[in-house]
Length: 140
Image (cartoon, rainbow, N blue to C red; front, top):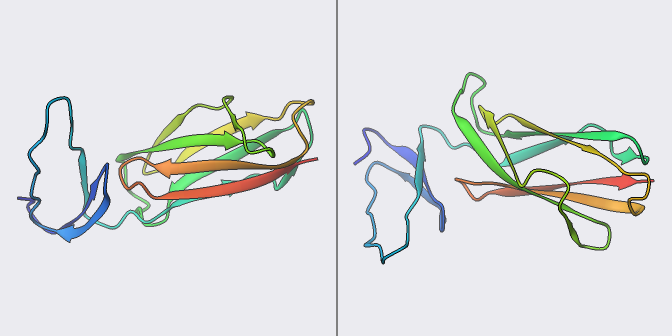
């Protein structure tokens, strides 16, 4: 039982809704069940991009947050991140994860002179809620 109603998320299933009791499933060997409970709905991830267009040699900054997290929250939220090139390839140049108190985290990317021109996409998924968002920028 949870002391009072909370917004509950299952790592594999996503949102379980608002509840004060959680039924745990029997687990098979080598399996886990990861649950997160919040006194509020943390909302969806939000990405603020420092500039929509960049040139080679410039640094772009992505500020991550959660839309429903109160301003005074100090709990840590974690994000899974992927950078996708204009051709659709995953480019392994940024951390695969970012964490921050109150859901606030920052990712910086220095764009290389020889990076392909076009629309790049940052894919972000908050780990406990499984909610995701994408942001794009254009390399000129």
